[in-house]
Every structure is written in structure tokens, then in C-alpha cells.
Amino acid sequence: MIWNLEYESMSRPRLADLQSKRLQEIVAKVHAKVPYYRQKMEEAGIKPEDIRSLDDLVHLPFTTKEDLRENYPFGLFAAPMEEVVRIHASSGTTGKMTVVGYTRNDINIWAQVMARTLACAGGTANDRIQVAYGYGLFTGGLGVHYGAEMMGATVIPISGGNTKRQIQIMKDFAATILACTPSYALYLAEGAAEEGIDPRELPLRAGIFGAEPWSVNMRKEIEEKLGITAIDIYGLSEVIGPGVASECLEQNGLHVFEDHFFVEVVDPETGKQLPPGEKGELVFTTLTKEAFPVIRYRTKDISILYPEPCACGRTMTRMHRILGRTDDMLIIRGINVFPTQIESALLEIGETEPHYMLVVDRQKQLDELEVWVEVSEDLFSDEVRKMEHLESRIKQKIESSLGIGVRVKLVEPKTIPRSEGKAKRVVDRRDIYG
Ligand code: DLL
Picture 1 (cartoon, helix red, strand yellow):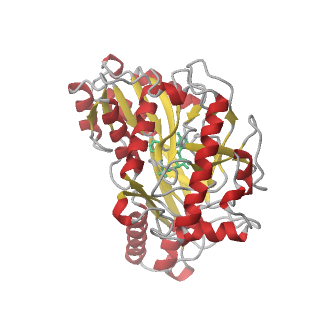
Picture 2 (cartoon, rainbow, N blue to C red):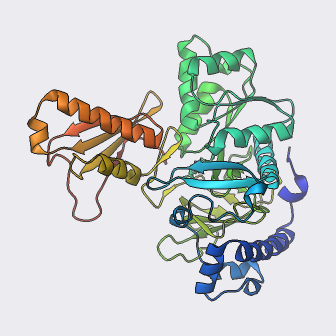
Picture 3 (tube, rainbow, N blue to C red):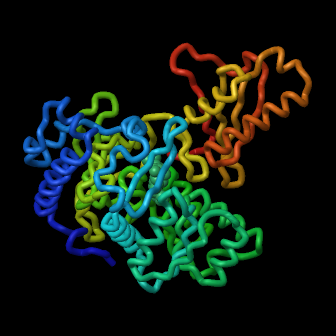
């Protein structure tokens, strides 16, 4: 079923008209309400009236995560705080988080695009949706939750973690759709097997998985082990959260909900817009959001656009499953981690050398992050107790700033390879984009 047939299957020319009208409105709005955008537009010599069609969008400057950081926490909000009913946040590149806000109407739009996403996975009011994305500042849990309620489905708001309980509830409440990260879905499958439960015999029939990259092989494995259809869903906090794009049952690219989010692919080096079919960085402009509109937001996610019609009947452009990142952001158990966050934690503690390395692996479907840090010769040859103490201080510091568990390994001076150019800080042993 298509949740909103009128919009999701709109003819391309009508859609372009709608987008063009909405684009002009949003540009005028941010110019009037957000000093940052006004200034950027002035610097570029552009007035809102210059944006007359979708082709004019390329004249507008990009917005980046750094811009959000400079305006931390609420500097880019376009609505007064009394109209903001919700805040979410995601990792920033250093100590500061990326903060986003929603008006009541934004929450309503978000619920609608999430209802579309669930319908893309074959969901209806008859479904029981186990929401195992985290609830809280992360957009996953509450995003799916509101969409599922709007659809009229039964929500099981269990949030992430506690695998045994997840499996028990999945079975006892007869959940039909699972929402979580793809790696957690595989972990649940293994957990079920350990409990002597064959998930393929449960009523579960579909999953909406995202928040991290996953390969074609991983999809196969999830589908086989859980006996379900696994749907890729994409989104980011800065744009709205989950609900920016979703695969349909054709499983051949993710439909971008373009009546709300205008999508471009640009060359990450030059910023030049690329034609459909070419690989580059996704850039989004929100067309309808009130509290936190973004203009040409650089996602750093790599994909390709396919505007051809889809057999499902939706006319919305499809994007390829995410093919990589243009930066070194890692996603560990669904949480975005920037090496720079770890670097600033280490710098705050001091006492170590500025050489570190992050080793990421997937053990039994769970991501593990190991932080190797060089210590001085003196400290290394010192008592073991002192080393252990430092190790645990670093661990605590990183864990509290990142919100995920890490292992810390202090290593001898000069054991971390030096590079002549860009330092290679990350060894990722997972096969995530394959
Ligand atoms: O991860 C929103 C979300 C929640 C999406 C639940 C899907 C499901 P952030 O925490 O802001 O928001 O992280 C956004 O995660 O820029 C991508 O790099 C990555 N990402 C999200 N979905 C996918 C996906 C949520 N399906 C960042 N495939 C994005 C690959 C994804 N990467």
C-alpha cells in the first residue's frame, strides 16, 4: 500500500512545481528568520527573489555540520522556542552535539514520512511494530514510534538493548515488524537461536533497518535468519531523522520523500551538482520544516540517484543504498562516532602521546571499538597499576562523551604507524559497504 498516494505517485512535472514553490517559501523564510542564512546569502550576493526555480538552488551556499556547531545549540532555529515542541541531537565532530528542533507541525510531517516508510515495508494498521531503536535524543526510536502510531499500527516501544527480553516480547506479543539497526537484527537472530527459538517460525515478516550502512550480503543473512523482508531506511537528524528515504518492497533503491526533502548529488571535491546516475555526496534541502530548516545540507553520505519510475507505483526518486562516507565518521552500534571526538577526549586527559588508532571489528554481530593510545616511555616502563589507572580513566572519559563502550589499550611509544600524509586513524575490519 502507498500511504499517501497523491504525493508519493505525483507526476514529475507536478512534483517539480510543488518543490519549486516550497523552495522559494523556505528560502524567504530562512532569510527572514535565521541570521546565519541571511549572512551567508548576503556574502554570496543572493536575495530570496533570485531563487525562482529549482535550477537556481545551485546558487545557494551549502550548510555543513561545522555551521551547526558554530550555531550551537539553537542558533539555526527558524521558529521561536515557544513553538518548538521537541529537541533531538546527534554526535558532533568534537565535544558539541548537533542539535535539531521540531514544531508540532514538524512532528506531524515526520510522522507522515515515517508512516510512508512503514507502508513501503508493507506495513498496515494490523501490524505490531517492535521499536528496538534507541529512544531519547537519537531520532530512531521516537521517529518510528510516531509514524507507527499515525499509521494506526500497534507500537511496542521496547527501545534498544536487553536482547533476551526483546526475543521474549517478539514472540509473546507476536510482533510483525521489527525496527532496529541491521547489525542488531542479526544479533537478535543469534540471540533467539541461543534461546532455542527459531525466529522464522514467529509472525515477524518485515524489518525496517537503518541508521548505519549494511551490505547486500548482510541483507541476505538477515532475511534468511529471521525469515523476513529486510527494508533499508535512511535519514539523518539534521534533515528530520529516519523517514528521509525508504526502500519499497521492490528493494531496488530508496525512495526519497521529495515533496519534503529536495535531494541533490554533488561532487564532494568541487561541490558541483551531478546528473542522475552519477555517484557523489547527498545534499538535502528541507522544503517544509519549520523549526529547523536546512538549505543544501552536506550529508557526507555517498550515493547515486535514479529518477526512473519504480514498479511499486511511487514516482519519488530512488537513491542507491549508502555507498560510503566522504569523511571518517564511524557508526558503531548505530551511534555516530567521529575520531575527532576521541582525540579531544584524549587531549583533555593529557598524559598520553598524540598518537592513537581506532580499531573497529564486529564480534558475534556486535560492533567493538578498541582505542589504542601511545604512552610515553617513562609511563610504559612504570608500575602496572599506574597504567591500569590511566587506561580506566581514558575509557571512562571516552565512554561518557561517546555513549558507547570501548576497550582501551595503552601501547608502547612508536608502535602506531606514522603516516606522511593524512594520518590513518581508523582500521575498520567490518565489511559494511560490500
Ligand atoms: O541515524 C536516523 C535514522 C534512525 C535513520 C533510524 C534510519 C533509522 P543520525 O544519528 O543523525 O540519524 O545519523 C545519520 O547515519 O548521515 C548516515 O551516515 C547514517 N545512516 C542512516 N541511515 C542509514 C542507512 C539517524 N540506511 C547518519 N544506510 C547518516 C547507511 C545510514 N547509513
